[in-house]
Structures are given as structure tokens and as C-alpha cells.
Amino acid sequence: MLTSSLCMVLELSELDVMGNGCLLVHKVRDCIQKTLTEWSSKISQDQNQETLEVLECSVAQAIEKINPEERDELKVSAKLFIVGSNSSSIRDAVDLACSALGVAQLDSVIISPPPVEDGTNLSLEYLQPYWKELENLVQNKKIVAIGASDLDKTLLEQLYLWAQVKPSSNQVNLASCCVMPPDLTAFAKECDIQLLTHNDPKELLCEASFQEVLQESIQNMKANNWIPLWLLRYSVIVKSRGIIKSKGYIIQAKRNAS
Picture 1 (cartoon, rainbow, N blue to C red):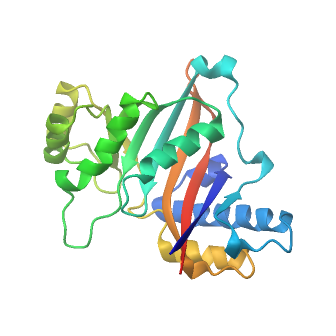
Picture 2 (picture 1 turned 180 degrees about the vertical axis):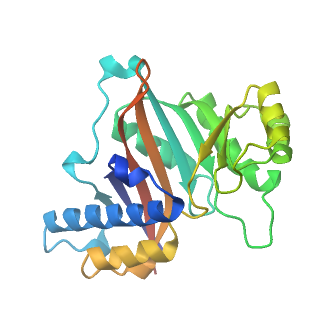
């Protein structure tokens, strides 16, 4: 079994990252297609994608590396959406984000693990391998602070009591509650956990949608062999002014071929 990988660096405008979850899904899909189309038009026409082990898919203006002299003035945050079930993808995502942005570490990473199967509740056991990988990256000074997403009070408390590196934040989906649950608010305040809101859909990038846009964008691409592994959304914020300097997505997929 041969395994190849594809990495894409995307830059999104303010319009592209705002709006409801359904709109965001379409915007991400459109941006992937635009990047793939532009990239494929520039590569050699006789280049055979099926023989490559790694496809580095990016456009020159897609990302701006951070000036080392400005690093202390900036906060680099990320939310990582795991599409596959492999927790080792977390390290790859963080390493690629640091490399693309030209930084040694990310200031914060919030994890969004793969959706659980229908009829199954999210559990601490399900979260543990992903959180352990994040903890390793904190200990290796690749991440400063780590956070969770969509945990209720019970699960957040379980994670907090079990974890060696405690969650610094927990994102709550606006679609699931208009007001923060009082018990969650009280526990977060007691343990100094920042509660944030988001409007991300449960599944920001599915396998079928990715394969469809891949097939539409690159000729002679056996899209059904490609599986998205993760999608990382980053933002670079000027600390003193609270404004966003840059933001975008980085995606990695793999190709399995016999």
C-alpha cells in the first residue's frame, strides 16, 4: 500500500470566515477549489500527480510568514478540525502551521475531534488520545495553551480532573445554546477556563465534498483515493490593538493506492 499526501495553504477574506455554519462550509469548499485550480494551472502539464508522494499545493500570496521582530506583538491561535480518526495528525498539523507561518510555536490551539457516530455521546475516553497528543506538544513547547470545543459541564470537568495540562478554554456552539449554561459558567469561572462561542458546523469538511472539489479542480486526478485528514484554521492577532492581521486555513489529505 502506497501512501501519498497533499497539503494546501488557503487564505480567506473576512467574508469567508464569517456567517452561519452552512455558509462557512460552502466558503471553505469554494476556497479549496480556487486554490487547487490556480495551483494545478501552474504545475508542469506532464507532471503525473499519481506518482508523487507529496503534493504541496499553495499559491504565493496565500500566506505571509511572521516577521521574527514582530512575534512578541502577535498572538497566533488555531482551531484544529480532525477529519480522520488518527490523533497523530495533530502533530503534523501544528508542525505545518508553524512552518507556514514562520514561528516556533502556536500560542493556543483548540481541538475539534472527529464527530462521534450517531447515537453515541462524546466521552472522556474518546477525547483522551487527542488531548494526550496536545499535551505532548505543550511539553515540547510547540503550543502554549490548549482548549476544547463543545464540552458540557460534566465532560469539561472530567477532562479537567484527568488532564495533566488543563484546558485553558472551551468553545460553545451558538446554535446549541443562546445563553451559556449556568453550571458550565460556574465551573469555568472556578477553574479559570475561558468560555468562547463559535458557529462552526459539526462537520466543516467531509470526505465526499473534498473528493468532489478535487475532481473538479485537477484533471486526471483519482479523487476517490484521497481522504482529508485535518483542517486547521489559524488567526494572527495584534495583541495591543485586538485586530486580526491575517487568517486562513491549512489542509492535509492523504492518497491510498494499492
